[in-house]
Image (cartoon, rainbow, N blue to C red; front, top):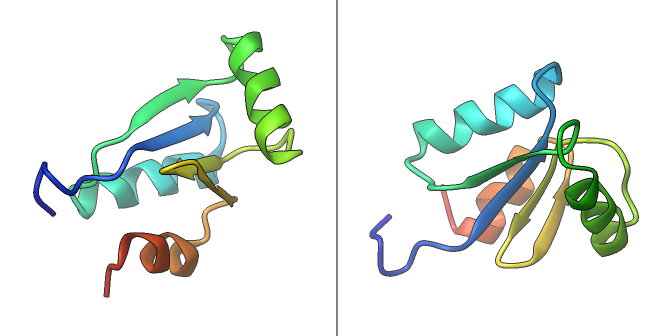
Length: 83
């Protein structure tokens, strides 16, 4: 995936969430750049995540503002056109 067509990816997570860690590891393996937001430390970000998606649990992954709730590899792959 080249830097030119790299989507904007934000991972809302907490340090103790195993699915969050799996999602971040998957992004690294696939060379997907992402911004990590720790909602346990940033209450405003947690409120923003809930406002955008209706979800209070993590992980929530925004890919070009399309929410993926949980570590849903098939949905992530579909949005990013990964085989």
